[in-house]
Amino acid sequence: MNKVSTAARSCPVDPGGRPQGSLVDLAEAFPVGQFIAEELKARGWTAPELALRMGWSTGHDAELNQLSVEMLIACPDARVGDLGATQLGLAFGVPAEFFLNLERSYFAWKDKQAPEDK
Image (cartoon, rainbow, N blue to C red):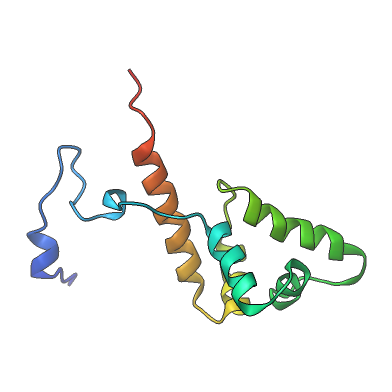
């Protein structure tokens, strides 16, 4: 039997049918790349070091791996996906769900900011 908390059942919904207080009601959200950039700075890591900690290869592919990390940082719309979230979680010592939730929150917030199509 699927149990739902009393708070979840009584959560009011907006006119679009979404629960109020859901991800789309965030005041602001940030892309995964911004988190990565701040963590690299705080930990004193470089993009190549992060790539190594994510389990990416060295050698010939090292420049491509560094570029991939830099793209995540520079492109707010870059998506990490399940594999990237798992690798980032390994590198930063957090569950993959942290990055998936961060990504989901950012895109839900961004979609909410987009002007309505008329």
